Length: 91
Image 1 (cartoon, rainbow, N blue to C red):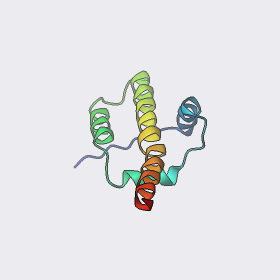
Image 2: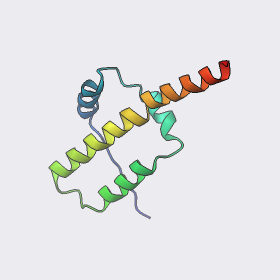
Image 3: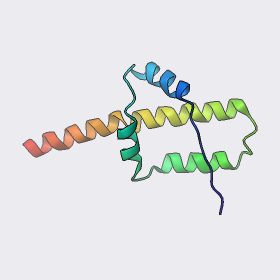
C-alpha cells in the first residue's frame, strides 16, 4: 500500500482566494464537503504521486489547480447548495 500526502501552502490558498473573490476561506465547510469524496481531487492526487515529485513548477501548478477547485466546489458551492435546499424546503 502506498500513500500520497499533498500539502498546499497557506500562501497559495490565500492568494487564490483573493483572486476569486477576497472572502475568507471556510476550512470547516471545505472539510465537511470533502467527506463525500471528490473524483477530480482523487485522480489529481493519484497522478501527482506518480510524478516523482521533482519539478517545483509542476507542483505549484497542481497546488493552484487543486486550490481553485477546492475553493469553488467545496466552500462557496456548498453554501449555495445549502441555501438552495433550504429555499426549496420553504416552498
